[in-house]
Image (cartoon, rainbow, N blue to C red; front, top):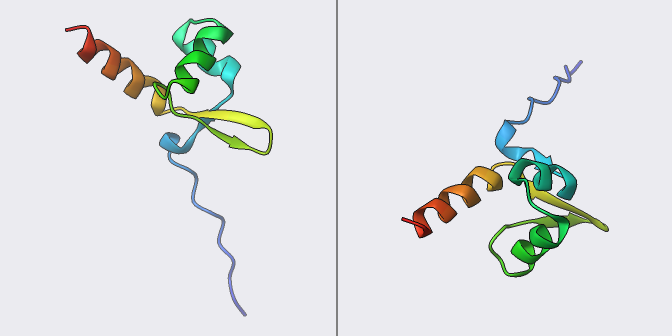
Length: 70
């Protein structure tokens, strides 16, 4: 008899944010968010028609922007 174990919980680096959550985290408008995605400054992916932004991309984006400004 085999034992089926529960899947390991995902590390928070695998969390995906909705565009609305990413907008709130960065405190930016929808147009600004989609412009950042369109220009490749903020990475995202789609699942079907749903756009998602990796949660780890928010602090990474902020670090890149801070480095550009210094």
